[in-house]
Length: 579
Image 1 (cartoon, rainbow, N blue to C red):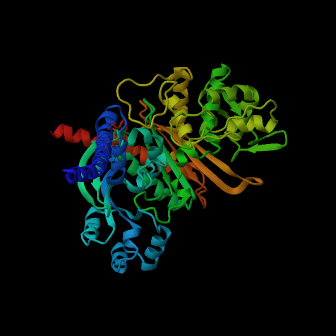
Image 2 (cartoon, helix red, strand yellow; image 1 turned 30 degrees about the vertical axis):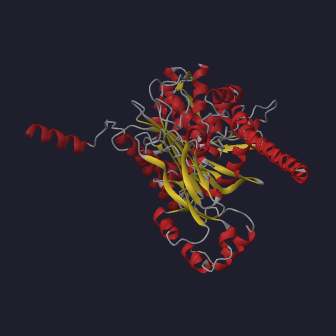
């Protein structure tokens, strides 16, 4: 018995240690289970999802779903800018760098192998690099089907411009990330661009997707934009301007046409141009929308506004006589000549002949302040607020002291600057009963914006009739006539300014016109910059372009001709009688 008792007494301490260790292990297990429960349930409920976030960070990936950019159309719904689906190829340099298939990949991409290897070296250690952006989908699918290691594709959109060079300087273009960087694309980028969506998927340790979770936030497409231009007229103007610039050897040219009643821009073209769908070799000088960004001295096209000042003074009518003999006049150190001595002629004939002597006498009698005030009212030197990037306001100086020659040259349109669009806006006053409306690059739906009365309706009507005579037999713009319609306008021929002053043999030819005179529908300004040869004047270089584009514009607008050749009228009567 004693031996058994002694044996049990020796075993007791060992069992105690065993129970102690087991208890400690159970306690640690309980703490571990409690912590797991705390992290998974209690702390998650309180918003602390640490473990979940850490797990997601190692396996859950997100991707952006590209958003469709809004469509730009002309006033008739013709697409001018659309987004087409493309595929951008990208790679994980860590997986691709050591591949034996690099030569095959370079060939399929159309790249030189050294160029591809150099790019991989630049992105050494990175997880992402673009191989090529915006590949045609079927071409990208062919490359992806070859399963190059670490090469993947993602869907994007690329901007396409159906009108090409015809509307390029107005529409502008986007960059590779579908952000507008020029023209309308830039001006209305926030309106056109969509909101990208988001999707999630799970990747394994090797970077391969093992499960697509799905769309978390759908992409929201951008809003469409309808411009005021009519692509039919835009195309016609582009063709005629290109023909004129080429024929005259000019450096550049611009044409802009406004709806006389609403102020909408129906067409706006420039030359030279560029192709927004293929930008290789694109020159910055070809990208400018010169009709709205470049300023020029308007020259004699301002004499119609000087005529307004004369009529408003009450001292002149269109039939008031002005003696232009002996064909020249001297003011201060400068002499202003006419091509010949016109003698005593009416104020209307002064504008028809663009007489320097007659306008000089008007300027001396009226004073430059009255003329300056008319120019200001017509919006010369004021912003047009079209929202177009780089829009110029022109310049109408307001000096405390004017030299004698500056007072006279103001009446001729020298010493001030305008854009072709700004000049067209000024001429809408004559076409719209003295009312000037804001210029709009967007199609107007519904009620017209409020205009302002710039001159009295009767004065606007008188000036319009004088402008019609400018295109008559005694005027300087006979080449601006349009068969079947009565038109009016004013020519301008301006010396270009260089570093040392006016350049003797460099000109800007202009014509600003209204059609038809009896019920104006369009106002068009044509500018030919630096025409060469003998056809450098506004009547020879710019007026024929006005005639061609106005003829097309009136027919596109469905304006009924009011004048017919005598033989056409006779033939119509005969056919009517026979019927």
